Length: 606
Image 1: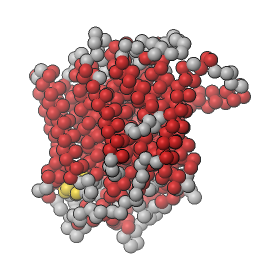
Image 2 (image 1 turned 120 degrees about the horizontal axis):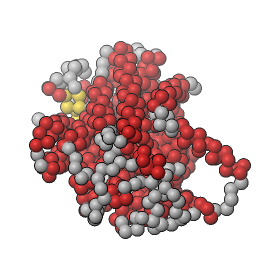
Image 3 (image 1 turned 180 degrees about the horizontal axis):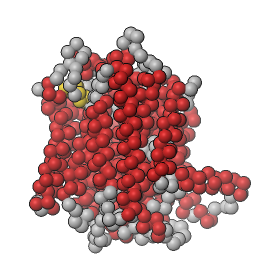
Image 4 (image 1 turned 135 degrees about the horizontal axis):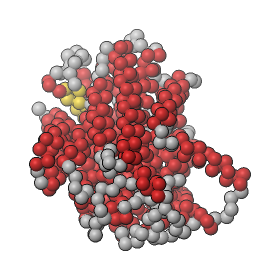
């Protein structure tokens, strides 16, 4: 057995076994032992994922569980497929779990071992979902992720609004799971297969069925994955869940869980439906949903007073940017989104951990109530300032590099409007974070009375304020930002994401590896130039816009009076957008059904 074949199942088995052990015996162990065991499991997963990634830097490997190898392209076994993209997601999940667990050492005054067990079960679901090569097993890991996430969201269950946020999260994502299951049932009825490779081969065979059942299966699968990704209009649960979940849990929600929804769309399309469905229709649908998500998330982010909600909506906005990049259906764009996503995940996680420091010290995350109170928190101030600038595309961080590659791909496709969508989205979200930094850490702008109701609804209180912020609550944020910087610098030294993207977007190669054990062939990837003059120019423009928006938010009372005929329609539109985020579960379910109908209409209509 090869090293990769041995390590792939361990990335799922280790957190499952250790999580079960902590759930059963953790209450009898000292806190330091529970923390150490959980950290060791997360570190083992990270190390295994890094080894797989290094070994498979130029290829992929299929692992059939239980030795059920395919015969003549047919198998009933369970497939795990490791390639650079899935292995990279495993590493990302492990790193973020490590950061969250280290932060939790002193963040919680007292915490039962089931918190650690749930975090490890969540990690197992993330890894299994990324590595699965079977639609039904993707659904199983989708549900494992969900069950752990629902419990972690409602961790502070004694607070009514926590229960409401967890309930909204659980119901909407469970409906998303049922939608996925319906899609699986349709495609199984048409092909008699569940494996991604087998289904794709059946559909690509002569006389393949390309009727409405196949289209409907793609619609249902995609919309189910989009619920987990929090793509508009499936996104309403996300801010509610982020607002009430413990801060370390938000790190995984914003850094990896939603990203896996976009990954699932790409994996499903390129492994099963590529060459079957009209590529132009698929591209159009993903671009429209991505652009709507990016702009809605950005506007909602800028309008928030609650810092956790601000970051949650910024996550939604950036998920829209990921989806647009996938919708370009180009190797260069997919390479760019991989780079952008890794750097962005690290920055989001750092910002959420910084928010946790504010919550611990001041027992609120309301921006108005924190005005000028963060002056002494130099490390957290640095995290927010850098985070806002990185959101806006500060070179040479990985987010700037990935954004530049995607914008170049959009320009090559003749979709120059997408470039402006990227500029506006990143400028608005970056400006929102910089505005928060200016008001909280420098006391700029006028102080206003806090919104007590918003604090009562959204802020969790895991412990009383610490007299001094420990290094375990500061170091993870600094390290995550450093990783985003190192990843960006590595692209200057020749780190290439294009080859990994070409391997991922090769359905025939995927099927050959899965069904016949063929090694990945070195694809002739499109040459991707990361650092270009155009990329630097758009980064400068975006940063300037972000600074202007931050200044406008801080000193808005000093701005010239805007004519009513301009201001009133904007306020009406923003109020309507805010009103749609009502917190009512019935509204969210209605929007989910409307989203499915809209996705189907865009895909089918010419």
